[in-house]
Image (tube, rainbow, N blue to C red; front, side, top):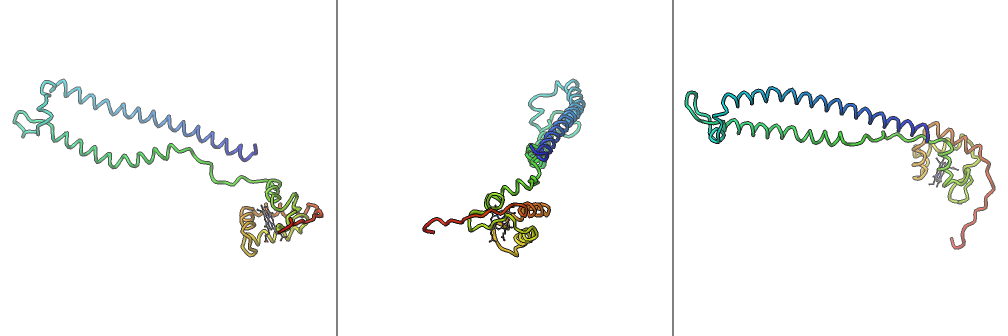
Length: 204
Ligand code: HEC
């Protein structure tokens, strides 16, 4: 495993640990706050039940309040109001909540950084077309072995800028950093050019 992918793995593990810790802390905090909010709520409900429990019957829930001083009446308007407020709050709160949960549940993806290749790894790719150590055996593909270093550099730049047109090589050259261009040019300048015989299959 290369140093780079090791680093990426460490990064991923440490971020997962960070997320777990943050999750535990926030979950405990919300639990605590919820418990705190429930204390006065049960206090009030308990108080109401103790003091007025005997007056709670079906009529209490299905009638509108009567004016002050008149006996009877209920809390229907309060129930209606609560439902409306809850519905409106849900309308505002649910969509961002669902979105937040959706994104929070996604695994962090490795940042889109290209894994740096060594010159040898690059050369292996180039050699797939340009032949072993740049000794092409296909007349359609130029050999690279023993080409002048400054020439190869210049040509790779020309492919990248579009000055020399070739879709394949433009794509290959676009991925190369300045240092990689340098190193590849030096690499191919060092390779021995071997004599090759281009044999076209008959009928072509
Ligand atoms: C998919 C096949 C393919 C791969 C992979 C490839 N090349 Fe090429 N390369 C070509 C073709 C085809 C040409 C000829 C294009 C032209 O006529 O301009 C070419 C031309 C070149 C030339 C110009 C040669 C000359 O004599 O003018 C250089 C330099 C070169 N490639 C370098 C590279 C390097 C460095 C890599 C690896 C990073 C690479 N190529 C990978 C197909 C490929």
